[in-house]
Image 1 (cartoon, rainbow, N blue to C red):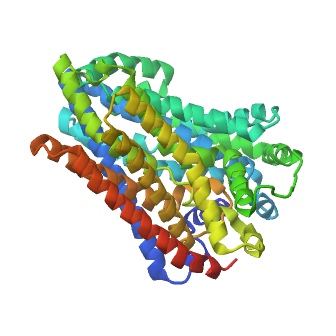
Image 2: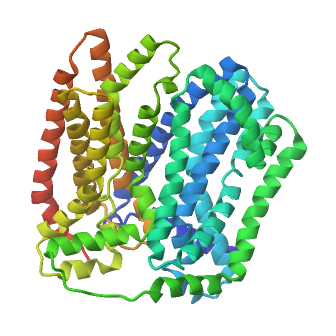
Image 3: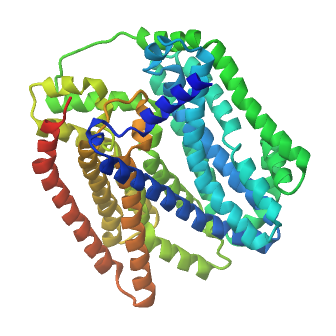
Amino acid sequence: MSKFFLVFKTQLLAVANSGRNMRKNRKQKATTLTGYVLMWLLMMALAAVYEFIYGAAFAAGGVMDAFPALIVFVASLLTLLSSISYTKSLIFCSKDYDMLFALPIRGSVVVAAKIATLYVLDLIVTMAILLPCGVIYGYFAAPSLMFYVRYYTLALFVPMVPILVAAAISALVSLAASRFRHAKVVGTIFSVALFFVFMLGLMSVTESSEEEIATQFSGIAETLTALYPPLRWFMDGVLGDFLMYLLFAGVSALAFAVIVFLFGRFYGKIHGIFSARAHRARYKLSAATGGTTTALVKKDIRRLLSSPGLMLNQLSGLIMLVVFMIIFLAGGDAFGAETAEQGEQIADIFGVLFPYLFAMCASMASLTCASISLEGKNFWLLRSLPVSARTVLSAKLRVHEVICFPVIVVCGAVTAVLTKASIVDTALLVLLPLLYSYNAGALGLLLNLKRYNFDWTNEVMVAKNSMPVMVVMFSGMLTSLFPGILVMVLYMMADVSTAISGGIMTLLALAVSVGLTVLLRKKGERMFEQIEA
């Protein structure tokens, strides 16, 4: 058991590690930890607002008992998707394999520690979703005190079964994709498609009225429990069925044990198979024909396309942007309007909010937040190239622009054409999200130059859990949603033209872009030169 906790502690520290530049004093570590806690609290607050809207709808429809099932199902799906994205790199292709197996520790202990690390990371996100769910259910349903005891103890077991399924899917997809010539690209496409389908289904539900939501999920709850039987056990368990309570906890714990046994028993062989497949392709080093910047851009794009976890985590905002556009343009009655006049009013409101919703999604996709850290132990090779710091940083930012900008322009243009937007509204739909996206890229690069981490063993953890990623994501959400709400209020209450308010916001975003560019060229280049490789 002591060996398990030793490996488990090492894995957690590797995930939480912020790099050598953050090991200098306790004050910096305390600041980083405080930042993580504040981000988690903000995530929980956003989930609480979202869940309260659904809770009110379920209470109005008299199907409040189905509400926890829906939230648990969503939490399980999020766990499944996030676990798929980094199970392979954490377990099957871990970079610390040789180091761990040089120690006198059994493979099952190593796997158990890695799965426990994965469980803790997923539990942090799961509890941010499930903690407010229990409070909201209590507010509307007024259950007994024992409900909270049963609910929050069972919530600890929620991530276990999805982790088992994610590990199986990750292994099967990787093995199946390896039969193709571009195996990593195929695996990446599958992961992105799975996330896209999930977001499409989830966001399509948010466009319904309260009555429609309640009516839909009174029946869909039964469908969900049929598709995912542990949901029924969870629902019955928290409502007082002790046998179902034990069944859910027991099956969840058994799922953890199955992963540890199977992967621990054959860990060496499994890792050997995946490592062999990963290195079987020929490695070619060819001279760049398009210039130094182009060569660096191609290198980073190839790395992004070869990792489903990186693609899924760094492009989730763009996927949300495409899904949101599809949902809004799919039909006029999707917003729960009872009359044509109400439909026009709702469409008018969304027309005002569109540039800011698009900007929010665009700012949540930053490919630069971990671009420096992802160089890892090979950063010294990048530093040894006969190129300036400005060229390297420009290439990092160019990758962000090449991938994000076309999606933003196409979504904005399609929305403008189909909604018959004016020239001013069309300009806002395109320019504002582009500026927010550029700001996210420039800010992410600056933050990563300040908070880099070259000691990672799992590249997805760097792209998922680092402070630059969280700061850019939440700052983008806050600086787009609040102005959007303010513009909508001014438009509805004071009849302020969207051309005026939107023009002011565009100028402010442009000023921020200029400021970030100046910082990147002056301070960013100096920070790059001072990094200890």
